[in-house]
Image 1 (cartoon, rainbow, N blue to C red):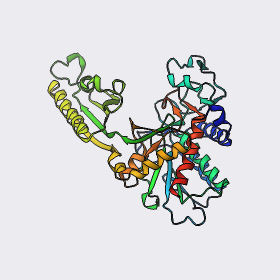
Image 2: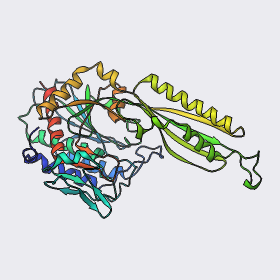
Image 3: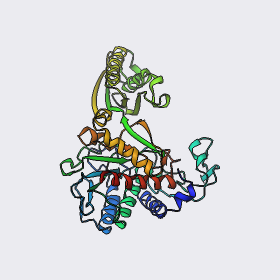
Image 4: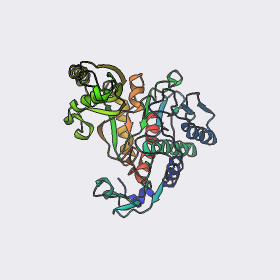
Length: 418
């Protein structure tokens, strides 16, 4: 990889940084408790902004549908109309783990590699976040510590927009047909539920929704959500002996039996987990949401059966109460379908090398819209954006790595035209 100074000297650097800062200021948090898509009205502001920017770049085939899915097409270079169409995808919503309203992005030029005070009480320190230490001399974009940044996935949006602008400005660089897709509600797991799949012409697609430079992700979790309902029996607690079944205690008992060694904070690599995500209720009724994640189908079946066994165990503890489980699939591991189309991943790896990046394949400990799109028949690996510490108030992005992501988009477009 070239030095930070060489990378940041490229004209794409200022453009992609300016875009991320501008997009990050627009609050677009989605809401997993809302069934509608988009789940929040705020997502429309960024979608409409991007619609206008794509049209201003000269694209005439731009559609923003009633569910906030934005699809645009860049025509092929003359003579290359017969080449296969490929897509680039990113999501416009941000996570709800930390506030995403009133984001105040800050650009730190020539970062010195030392602890950086974001605001009183919030310090971004390389001793806690070691990736920072290697970015001395880079330009980084941070928050003020009171919100997330939203680089997940506005960095990806900014990179795709900057690459499309560059291709339009350089007609001498030949490419086939290109589709751009920006989606809502990826963070809720519903990002592809109403996606206008039949309108897509691409034979392959690439999401830019990863992290560290060089990451190429072709494998993800199988993901299920368990909604557990605990029904107790209410009576005055002063005369409750033998008559009360406390639904709150039932839910707490279920959580306490989940193996701590298989929690998100206890696992990495190819190890899956149980994650109790939300619990609420009262003596008579309580509700618990649990995320199940595993890279293998067999492992996921074991986790589902474990939840069923725990439900029975709680009912045995509380004979006056009942437990019901609703088990829903969210997405499946995309590896099998990507393995069937090895050229899609190979071209991503080659493009990264041409952009000056040494790629490496790693599993996604999560999922992307690309995983769902792969399941639906269009192979879609996920690539790096240069964002770090996603979903937290200590989120930051490397502008140099964002430039390399822009260059990777361009090289992918060129490769599919060869």
